[in-house]
Image (cartoon, rainbow, N blue to C red; front, top):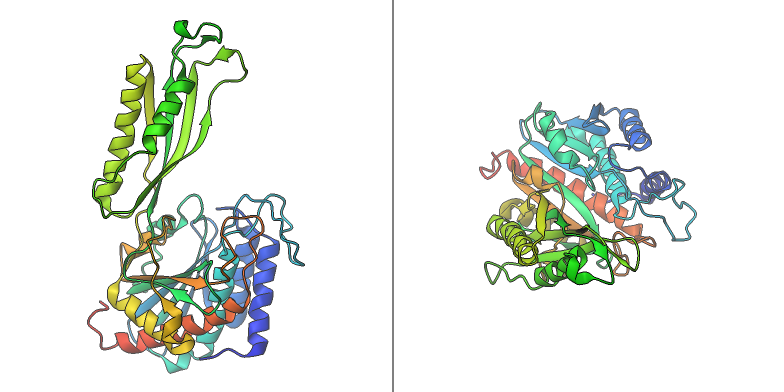
Length: 388
């Protein structure tokens, strides 16, 4: 399928409306209302209020038992937009700097295309508009509230925009994101006058030693990519007082369960060693967040085939390395065969930046590919044993 120029303009206008009114995780009330009303106006069955602000649409074909879930995340980030565009964010300090307005507009467009041909296919399309990807893990909560059932989901797919040339899709089977864990390290020393450090146990110095060692961690397995980043050190209030406490905040990211556990144990050990050496105490609050997104080999191959038919196979590429970002789409990929594809929106458009301004030509491309993939999935799955 290829959408018309008129529909492309409609879907771009939708994206711009979403972009003007970004909302943080579990606060996406205006966004959810727009989504629900658009789907209802099309005639699609809609359920709202899932995981507080999530929306689910269901398109039922002629018959058939297979169901494809398509996910779009809908939340924004606490970033002040600097891009000078007509549809600039109207919500102070909040911005769609990760492209979730694109994801939502593409899925709304895909919904319109698929609903218009619902009499031509067997099976179901479940449209998941998910809150709180950036913060609270809305996917997990939506699953707990039953989105994988009634009808039972057989496979899941989603996009994420990426700084790639427009007209490019990037994907591969296996691990495609990291587990984005967070940590806070609390160091308790003994404060005092800056003129007498020998009478103190300086937690700031210990924090520096821990930070240096965290940067020197070697992987448990040499061929496994990982990241440990210290992103904040806080301690003390003035130039001549050694504080009692200091806090380090950071993130560790890994692409397999063994390395994930190894990083946790190594970070904890380093903190205890460095604090103990100076007679201080250190505790580690470690937040194991989203799992790793795993792309199913068969489903990913099918998506690549569909994208290649529309874009040319040379424009369907594999990543040069696994991305260290995290995404709670992983909760879906743990349950059913899944495919997480990155959609090019321009090489200079870096995510999570205040001047993020993705190329809107990618919206039509995203709708075209996802619509064709959904139709081909349902056609194949009628006789394909790979899809349970």
